[in-house]
Image 1 (spheres, helix red, strand yellow):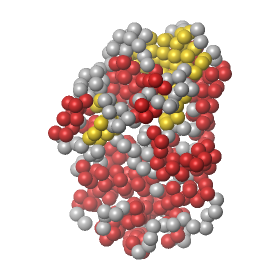
Image 2 (cartoon, rainbow, N blue to C red):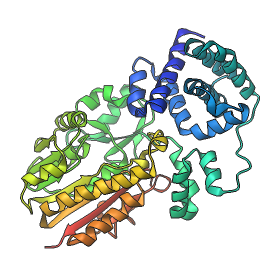
Image 3 (cartoon, rainbow, N blue to C red):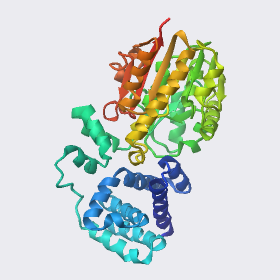
Image 4 (cartoon, helix red, strand yellow):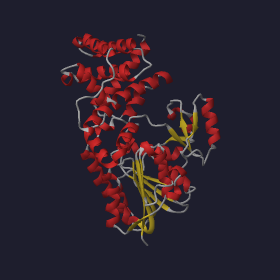
Length: 446
C-alpha cells in the first residue's frame, strides 16, 4: 500500500468519525478532508464516505450477521469495518485484496491491537460472501428500512403517503443527485461558460429542464475553486431551488423581503431579476451563514440588497404593516428532500425535528404576513416533502389570513407545466429529477 492509499483511507476513516460520531454535516467534512486529493482520489473519497453513510443500515445488517456481538463493538471499530465492507460489497472497481489490506492498515494505526487481526478476519470472510440479503422480515416497511437503509419512521410515513411510489422514492433518494450549476446569464453567455469549462477539462452539458440557464457537470470538481465561480458566472443550485425566484416573479422598483436569505443565491437572483432597481431586504440570523450571504450577493452582482444579520421575527417589527410588494420565505426545514446530497440526514433527523421545524415555519409566517401589502404576493418554500412542513403550513396561513392561492404553472418550464395550478407544487426526486422540494404562492386579497 502506498502513502497516497494510506492517506485516502485514513481520510475516509476520519471523515466518517466526524459525520457519524460528532454529527457534522457531510458537505463540510468532505471538503475539509479532500482538499489535497487529485480528482480521481477525490471522487473515490466522496464515493466511499457518502456510500457508507447512505447504506449504513444495510451494511450493519450484513456485519451483524457475521459478528454476533457487532452492536457492542467500539464505534471506531464499526467505522473501520463499514468502510472496508462497503468497498467489498458495494463497489466493483476496487480489488478485494486492496480493500481488505488498506482497511487493515487503517485499523493498525487507529484501533487497539486486539482489533487488528479481527478486522482482517472479518473482511477476508466478507470477500467470500454474497451481497447481504434481508430475510425473515414480513412487514414491508421494516423490510424496506433495512433493504433500502432508511429509518423505519421515515419509511412508514412515506409508504402511507405515496402509496405505489414509495419504493421508487426510496430508490431515488439512494442515488447521487446530478450536479447542476446556474449560469448567471445577466453577465455572461452560457456558451462562453461551456467553452471555458471544456478548456479546463470539465465535461458538462445543458441541463435538460432549463438548458438556457443551467448546466450539468459530468466531471467531478470543486466549483468554488474555479475562476468562473469566483467571477460570479456559475453557482451550484438544484433545479427546484432555482424555480423559487421564477415563481416569486419580482419586478423592478418593488420592495421585496427575503426572510431566510442565506446563502444568498436566491437573494441575488431576486435582485438581478429586478434589474437591480428597487429594494431587497435580506435577513439571516446565523452569523456564519450571514457571511455567505454577503459574499454571494457581492460575487453575483446584486446591488440593491440590504443585508440584515438578525432574527426575521425581530427584524420585521421595524417595518410597518403593508410594507412589501413580495415576500419570500425559503424557510429553515428538516432538509429531508436533500438526502441524495446529504445522506447523513437520514440518521440526524427525527419526527420531533420535523414538528419543531413546522412550528418555526408558522411563527415566521405569522410575523411577516402582516407586512405584506394588500394585493402583494408571498412565496413559501422548503427542501422537504413532509406534510407538516408543506401543505399543513399553507393550510394554516391560508385559514388564518386573508390569502388566496395563485396559479404559477405558467412560470415553470415545460416539464413542470402540470404543477403549480393549485398554487402549490411538490417536487419529488423520482419524478422531477430534482431534490425533494415544495413551493407555494399566495396573494393577500386587496
